[in-house]
Length: 321
Image (cartoon, rainbow, N blue to C red; front, side):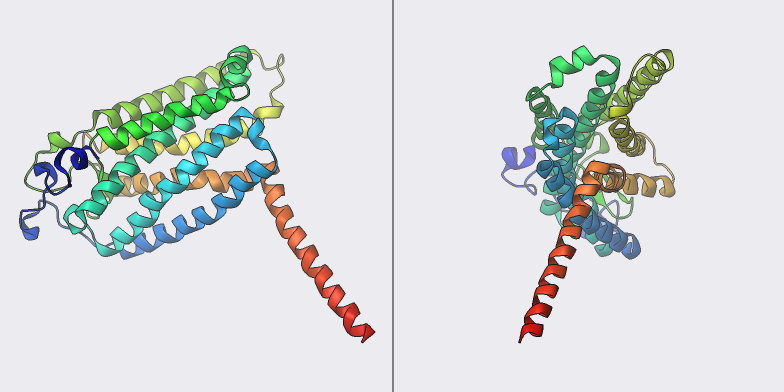
């Protein structure tokens, strides 16, 4: 986003200018209609089911628990990022777009997509830290996450993501490569000019921190198997583990894209994994979280009962006439 501040527009920045003829672009676009429609359908589905999950957290007063505060923030980030990395990506795949097809749109949304990914990694890692310390080191967890202090910890990934949005190079959509990458594929710049060190460091730190935290948890549980009660947080821990594993797979693929050109199948897996990073938490909440699932299902049961009452009332009215 710094191009907008420094040059006034994306096109005024020599590194992102589409002044060269379109046919001279180093990477032409490729239409991928099936993949595009699949992403759009999945993205719309995710947006629809995320809303009741977040409402259920509020109605059941789950936000009094630190883990749900983090999960709620993660949900908001996932919803906005899904609009870009899944729904918008689907449209761009159908169009066979590259950067110069929609330069301003792709550049700006690329900044926010990167920020969404960074924030998602931050909130996911924060959730893992919350779950692991709650079991391994409850005193530390009490100090850091108790009461409204959990909201304060959520500010860290938020500020981190905003910094990446406004002050680091954007990621650019390319339908041929089937990914959002740093290089816009124009002859004006060199690939090194678009290298985002923050993104690379973020992925490495996220992957290795996740492995280290889960290893710590496994070692602790092996030693304390019979000496600690963990059943109360077991389900949330399993849910956060699944969410984190999906994030790690996507982070691994996009880190490889910085250094080598992987097999197209691996790239597709990475793109789909990125969509799942922001979509699967909603599915996990509705299928694996009993409290949220029962709350949402209860709405439909109440609706069915209400419809039945109205129907019976009308029937009694007709019978009395």
